[in-house]
Length: 241
Image (cartoon, rainbow, N blue to C red):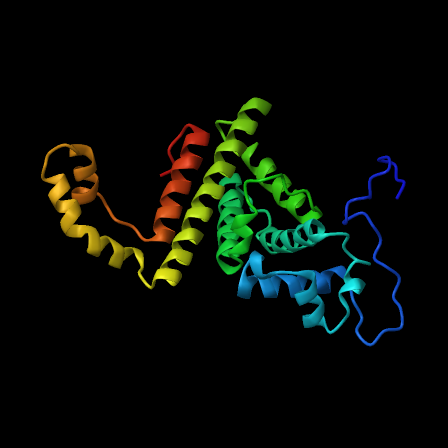
């Protein structure tokens, strides 16, 4: 396909939908993406295939290729559909409230669609809804007291995005581990308690001992919120009270 970009195909978001045709099952990219998301929620990305999506929709696999060229385009549509949910957080009157709303909405989306966390941290997501979320986040951070220029904004975005990717991947991985082993964090810690007690009593790990014995132990949501607060305090340069 010759385009203004050369011989490469236009991105899926810029290609028109195929013309409707007389068929028992009408299709659209939104319908295909919604079905793919439902299957990925149930079986993960490894259990996702064009054949399974087509079977779920009641059509032949080849019909889907009228709408998406390959699996990468399918994932792009799925990811951007999740970003549409995140974008619903909207804008708030104060920059920090906007960032908090977007980040919490991102966490909610990642926990509802665990496969989404697997696709964070790779190549940038450039669908229209992903760009809208990126614009809202960058515009809000640009209003933070500690962000004085474009370099500050890039560093702030980098720190925030690194936190989001790391925190969500860790939380989702822990959830998966708990399901696959039948052992949650509390039970795992209890099973290793006697060993850890013996190691800490050696005196070789005094700082770790303080953290374990005297530190506050938060659940996943509380830990996420506390660490997010630390990131935003660092961006502003003025702790939020």
